[in-house]
Image (cartoon, rainbow, N blue to C red):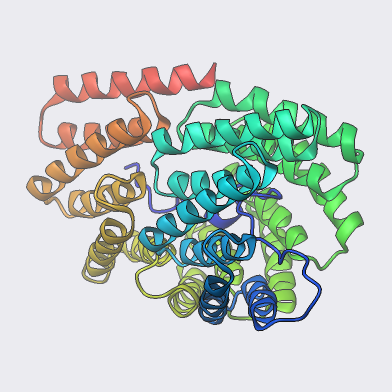
Amino acid sequence: MNTEHNRRGFVAFAAVIAGWFALSVAPVFSQETPWRVYNEDGLEAHKAGRYAESEKLFKLAVAEAENFGPSDPRLATSLNNLAEVYSTRGKYDQAEPLYKRSLTIWEKALGPDHPEVATTLNNLAELYGTQSKYDEAEPLHKRALAIREKALGPDHPGVATSLNNLANLYRAQGKYDEAEPLLKRSLTILEKALGSDHPDVAGSLNSLAVLYCTQGKYDQAEPLHKRSLTIWEKALGLDHPKVAASLNNLANLYRAQGKYDEAEPLHKRALAIMEKALGPDHSDVATTLSNLALLYNGQGKYDQAEPLYKRALAIWQKALGPDHPYVATSLNNLAGLYQSQGKYDQAEPMYIRALAIGEKALGPDHPDVAISVTNLAALYYSQGKYDQAEPLYKRALAINEKALGPDHPDVASVLENYADLLRATSRQSEAEKVLERARMIRKAKQK
């Protein structure tokens, strides 16, 4: 059975790179103002993972900035920052109009080809990418890239950031052949501009390694992850959160290969760093807990995995709210643990809640919703409830084909699950056709 409840366990560290989302610092003005205090305190709270506090402070900053006039750069800065907090907290519908308004102000104040316009375009594109609105995200990333190439030159680090973000969008869609040359160009730019040991080079190496991991090219990914880790340790110190992120990614690589003894100490070290640097209740600590739990779950060490999953769930609910997509991910993982133990009555309500959260936060046609749908289908399959499982597999397949394209690996995963059901219901010829299509997808992606 090919369940998917482990698929998103390292979501928060999947692509560590400078400039993923960009908060705006205060423009330089001569006097201290309440607006500046609100903005700077909001930035500090956001950095510390105190998102509710950060949201309140940025709202106050917006209110102050409204007094400066509708075209003031300080208003654009505040709108961007509040939008970023909303995005972090999964409030995507509230973030979008703020990014758009910020973009309009920057375009009017600085012209359509200013680098600050590119930053806001990038943030809006990242918001759309998070929601799997790839057709809306791609032209924004491309416009941001074009602006930076024209304004800053083709070899500027800002261009590398745009290349990375566009590549990560392609990776999410399974367009690996389009992503790889962008990531390689980004890495070349950063090495030339900043030197081979700069932290931003480590971020670029990490993104390329994640791409290779996604493709199962572990031999190519491992040296990149190791080099990234070495750079961050040297540049930032052994106890920096980015070192923890790099440790997590390397550990996930080993976990994917079944090298559990090599993965476990890396996850534990990452957890210790995160707890020390960010505090025990930070969202990134929850991600690290989930990674370690996934490792234990994969080894059948359910008693060790369960408390970690539960703690991660509690942190995310407190830090991000009960309806955030990360909460849905955590519920999916904990439900999968219960399913593995045959505790179906405990798993089902968690899968159903995760599905409801995803549909509300992301919309009914998002790939993460397809994960929840597939997981619920797999649960029913495990119980022999084939009539309940089949329409869910069909729905998950339709979502992934629409959102990701017919040749994405996630489409193959659902097809493989659905083929199991067809076999179990004595539809062998249908099962073979479905499985053959999955094989063709897998084969194409291995080239």
